[in-house]
Amino acid sequence: MTQKAIAGWLKGLIIGIFLCVLIVYVLVIPSIGQSIARAEPDFAFCYLPWLVFICLTALPCCFALYLAWKISVNIGRDRAFTMENAKWMKYISFSIAADGLYFFIGNVVFLLVGMNHPGIALLSLVIVIACIAISIAAAALSFFIKKAAALQEQSDLTI
Image (cartoon, rainbow, N blue to C red; front, side, top):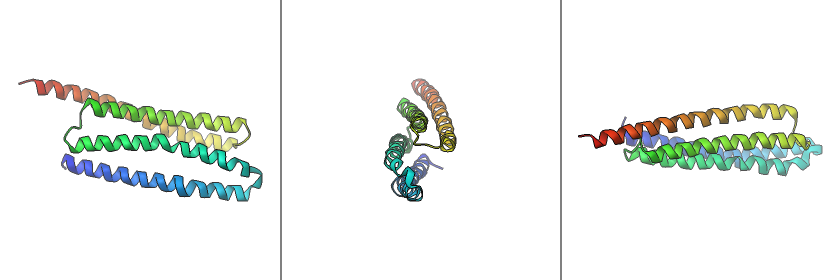
């Protein structure tokens, strides 16, 4: 498989993930929130704060997808192992870690002000753990891309 083909597959995957994120954040989450507000009128006041809180979690995800797109463009140009790609992977790692931290703190704050159920707060730890795992994987990839870029640069200088 050529690097252009790999880049094409990566771009297709990124577009697919973006479309899924768009559907979930625009259609699924508001509809679930509205159905909960209709079923439990006592918690209807929580709908808008939770909707804003959840929608803000999409920003780091979309930023990470944008950086992944830039990395896939570089892969298509036969520049897979560059310091630029390593930097972007590091930004992806920080972005996802910040998203997980924001999600955890937000759930705790909502729990303390009485707008969250303890079971939901515990269930949200699954999302936080997934964010940590993705962040660590992106940081490791950043490290290995940086090492490969240094080796490639060193071998390009050798005759």
